[in-house]
Image (cartoon, rainbow, N blue to C red; front, side, top):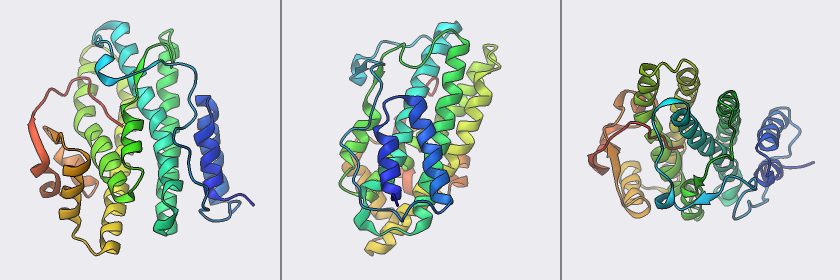
Length: 274
């Protein structure tokens, strides 16, 4: 019988996004149906499978994104689709990257659900792109998200701090402003999709906070102090403000943990991490 990590590796290795989404749902169904023999010890690859397109650029080499009309919507949707495709792989990577941590079943349940959610998000955004006469891969994209995974491959606590508790939490801060701007411009299709993503991200951030606190307690360290130490070490640029304190509170993310890590205010329009 295959293990969960075997199923995770199959999803990670898939180069076609549609296959990655299908394999994610199949792995979840097999796990919940008792057809996978425990978490397993198959380690993930250094990089997941990717389609031939989009072209991957360094973040500083990315062309400026337009914000008006169909061209602007396509640019935004493509950037978000790329984030969600990476997020599928980030979820499967955390499932099988840290077998020596001996995490409870609930940890795997949570990140499997995250992978399924991200697959749905990617498909929603891809459908919106197709409706606009485009599709994922038509524009360049940057590799910053997977670089975050590479930089935290050595430590589960660092991965939880950087990915769900920082990159996904940033989505809670920026998505409402993006939805409002799109609605003002007459877009009736994208804001409902972003609302689904936003609601799911609250649960994803909550999972990150919950399991970070679990790992900190298991290691015998204070959660807040360890979070701030890892932030300073692994995310030295600091956090952008303003924060969506209400959404972060829904995720169980204590304001005094992250507010001290903030830097100067920044523009929100169009931003959306994982």
